[in-house]
Length: 438
Image (cartoon, helix red, strand yellow):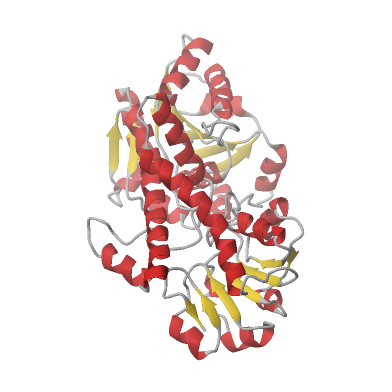
């Protein structure tokens, strides 16, 4: 099957490469000539484990190509995926659909024969209806079916998620489109990937509801962590105790500095706005957004407290900057408000991240970026683990203690054991675990 993928961001590039790996012939289109030039040279615009090799293999096999020209790719395609950005609109939090609608107009003008246009971008409920209206406006004669097919990829595990999905949600209103989408995902039938067909608006809602629910789980366990610190309980054991209940599940019950990334922050805001538009306010989601924003700021206070409130002139070494490991994504990362707050209080901030420092430099100024974890820690007054990269999980603690000017660690991801830190003589602050180890 010939496929056009409009947009070569995170979703578009991963989806296009995976579909090509299934045997489809995929052209990924992007208006940014520099991005296409980099992809043609084999350089990935994002970091995702395994993606560079996946792209190279399928380019070599001539199943995957890249172009700045939308019309020729659409003309040849049976299925056109829309994977352009839908950032939060400034001022009101709505999803900005200008990129979607702009691409739709071009697709409508270029399409030939029966074509399925698939919205892969995260869009509010009812967007598919507007996409269909725009197509009819531009090309009343066009034989185009509009489908919703939201993505559920986790950054850092996106290829595995695509090839072994929990579910594939497809919102269709046209029986021919249903048949076509079944063919697109036929290779996944071998892995018994559950293909869930719904109405289009239901599909659009599933995406937002899923992300809001996961954001709620994260925020819930973070609030329980705060209570655990006050009450002398251990949040990790609490999370395990409730997660063993199959009705709750263990995933997304890891206390930390709050959620970030490209999806949860903007999708929760967009869902709130949708609820307001339909007169169905979402009070729980509203609380989640507020609590998460406040939590990121409170992490800086935790760091300052570890130095007895005296942070001015002190050097803080941050290990990890990205919002999660195995990505270079800095969007809405908890590290950003933490750095700002520490700098406002007069601290000197150092940082090291295995993949995210190039992106971090675009948003965080006056930070001393270092080449390794140990270089970052050398002479610092406190070490702060912000992102749980694997290389931070097994640091040489004796070496760390020797490098720091004083043995103080603030672990915002709870990756170390309390007894290990006590045995090595650290003052150790973690999240929701019995307060301080002196």
